Length: 276
Image (cartoon, rainbow, N blue to C red; front, side, top):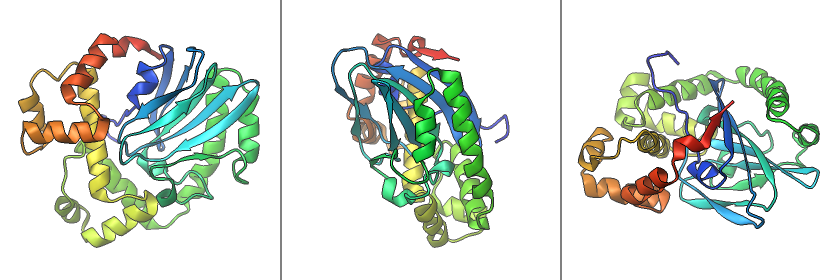
């Protein structure tokens, strides 16, 4: 993307709110948003809320000398991720264009699911290699080596994959505030063909991706302290009115905007993120 366009540095906020030792390395390149790590020091398992999200996460769970690898597919409704006691987590945030990273699992089959990858033929050796790594930098390096091979194969795919990436970039540039009719005009393709590509490449419709991208930018505005005027933000993000905005926000997060804003402020959310 060009430097004057917004970057989708989306995040699952409860990874930050629930851990207290969240680290991230922002990349925004070749389908990777950022790398992150956190741990569970509570002494017990707990379910961590996941919000509606067009991105996916690859999460390595380190516990008792072993690793368990989770692929957290795109989320269309709130759900949870089980964080185990005394476990450490290293994750990779994949943007929508990288949703087909796992060979054996078509994107459509991963939407709304959490899939264990350790025994998949394409991932088995890689997961074992990740299990022997003990620090953020080495885990990031080894992942990028594996991911470069995926990218080389991805580049050989048909041009429809490029169309998907172009439309994805446009949706991000517009912060999800774009209608399918506008995408038809801007791309020169019919809505039927566009949705067929999105179903194949992402497992969701363009409307669903637009909604989730818009929600992620909304969350970012909250983190930046821009939630004082609900009427203004409702208008900016093209909701019908304030009531519609509150309804959609609660549907996507399980909380009202005010409830969530208070939670972020009380936790000093941004101070809990360490950039490495």
